[in-house]
Length: 327
Image (tube, rainbow, N blue to C red; front, side, top):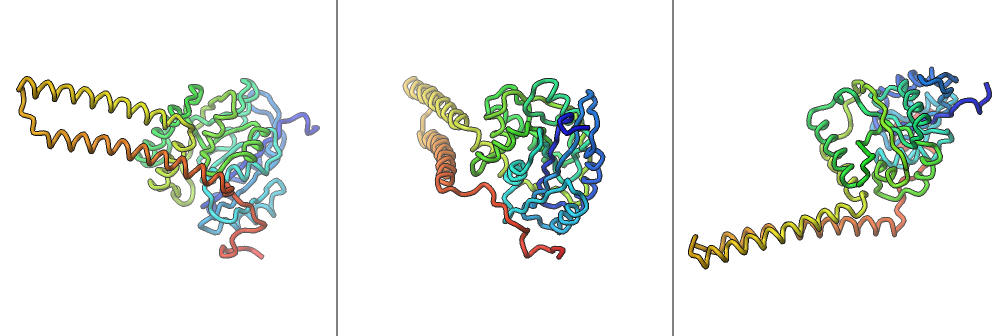
């Protein structure tokens, strides 16, 4: 079969704690590295798997080296330090060559066999981006599931694109879009927000999430909050508009309260001491002002970081020498 007859699929996996999970994940990818049909009858195969070493905490480096030596379709990318999941994913996307690029987590929750159905949805419906939509509850603690739902809902609100129903790290992106985005994305980007800037049509494919393998997820509550904050800051000017709306509502509320207090004093309806209402108003509006200034300061800091040319990621020839390596 000629290569032109099938869709070439690249898989990108950011690696942070993959020592116990990567081998099993690659074993699941091997069957789809030979040409086969999707459920809709389209020929495809995985032509490459890009493993991105994102300053891993464990001995993932040696596992990646073993897998690259064992499988010709495995390529390793070494980052100079831990940059985070989204920059690591973009670094891997920049190194792909396939018609489509899939992003998977290292922990085994995402089943590579679902990629055929996602390709059908993309090719058949003309979508440039396909997100996996879980049909079951994610196998995490309740607080993390709640946080994820909140991030997805607020992400849709902040981005302002009604076609976006939620984000997922299990994605299928048209290859030329993935590589172009990786080349031009700036520092501090939230990958899914950046995708919303350039993708015309988004689709959602139902999948079943599996239990995590190996170590528990490295996403603590603090990291999830940081993740969410980056979503807010990269969502454009809409958060500033929301703050402006809140400020306008606060002004209207203060006018109404002031009118009531003046009427009450004139009509001798209630004794007006003044101290409580004054302190309440000062605290309320000072808080709104400081919050607005804080958000504006974050935007200025992000702009300064971009102007200084701070890199989103940096690829090196080998992993951190402090990690265990095979000679």
